[in-house]
Image (cartoon, rainbow, N blue to C red):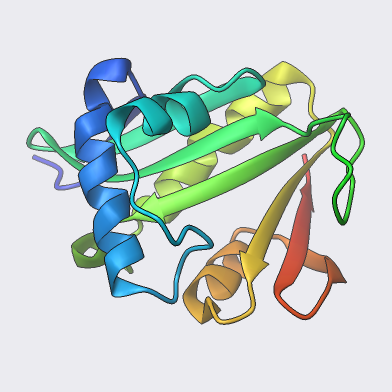
Length: 160
């Protein structure tokens, strides 16, 4: 029997467990751009079912959510720094403190990469705060390369 987590599409019913996972990461600090705690409605709006959603996957083992990864289309109306083409996707990854380093992120990314390919995305952007060394290393391991930065973030991309 494998100890590997099951990777599946996130559902609204997963949102409370996803909130608990993300809020623990926010409370720890240093590994997410989010600074304010989430609630279920915000989780659903931003990650489980955002307007430009491609996919959101969870990693689950024995009924516990170990992590999740959301993929959505870039916003063609974005007026902030580093606007992206409409055929690019954006990725966000969150793995519980207890499950980090156990391959959960790699399994999640395999599902997201397949979803990006199926949707016709040409590249995926991961924009990470500079202090998030673990996140920067993770995306590099997933084949992302630096392509833009400012004083706060480093943007990495992976061609799909």
